[in-house]
Length: 119
Image (cartoon, rainbow, N blue to C red; front, side):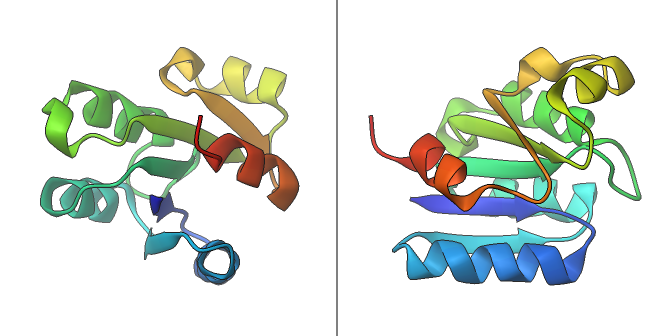
């Protein structure tokens, strides 16, 4: 699976990319919302892991724009990643329904692998 990682914490994003690579996924890191949208416009991703709090605009806006993009370039699976609990994230960031899943940081790699497993 080709995964787009969107997180302004570069060390965390890079570590997550390495872990996904060890599990036979391919992954690309972006550190701002705009970098994520640019990457998605030029490459197909099966999934996107999107931090809800980014420096340029919220992860919910990234998800909204990805969902509105042409189907062939849109990741089919959007996962919110946040330091907030799922309930707190939904309260802090209306539009949580844009995401298929929510993972709280630090990310449970087993849970992420179950989410990314082929159906």
